[in-house]
Image 1 (cartoon, helix red, strand yellow):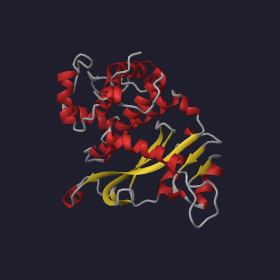
Image 2 (cartoon, helix red, strand yellow):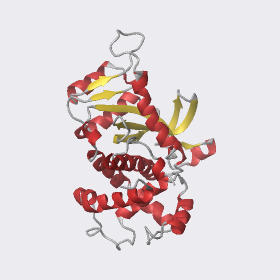
Image 3 (tube, one colour):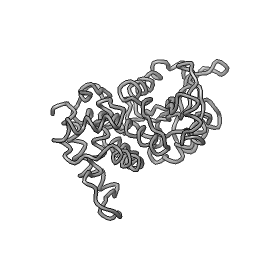
Length: 300
């Protein structure tokens, strides 16, 4: 099978139309309003292509798509219509990510990685004061980059190669254990007993560890702190796996350039980047690519 963007989009479209959307019960046939000329499957394929081609601006993306992708997507909305459809598709994007994850070999692995990373939403005080995200976003500090930011933190639980399993956005003032526990409680059906959840020192805590063990039947593994007996060691090499996933999201999928100004917009645009990552990993599994998180074949 050819490993390029056209092949990936074709495979994704067929998977959505034949299996994923019918399984999710997602159809416009029984919803009010005029049937759109751009189907939901085509919308998601366009969103994935936008992220893989690293075009963060939706206005610039529509110009590019109308010039280069009319053969693949003959019916294309204008920029405002595309933005509106994408914002409304946030829940669908999240559900599709889960379905793609279920269809990869790593779904059955015991190991899951968990961590969070900043998702800035504004760069100036004036923007913060008039943003529609006020009350949802907040100020936080990123120790790895020694900087303050205003926005959200993306919490991600994924497989070793980076396939998203559970994810969510939260105010950076909230504690890591608090947010992660809420995500795990909500999506506990996506984990199974006996799995190992690998986190950093920020997840140290008797109550959180007891929750993972007693409520989920899983095992929390994290680097040892200086003030406790040795158990797991430093785990520096393993911790780099999820840092590499975040590096892919920020470097190749422009996570910090999402440009969203509403809560639904942030959720959908972050979700679109995770969907692009999930699609690439899913496709690489099915074609037997040696590096599952590689996006090089799809970014041109």
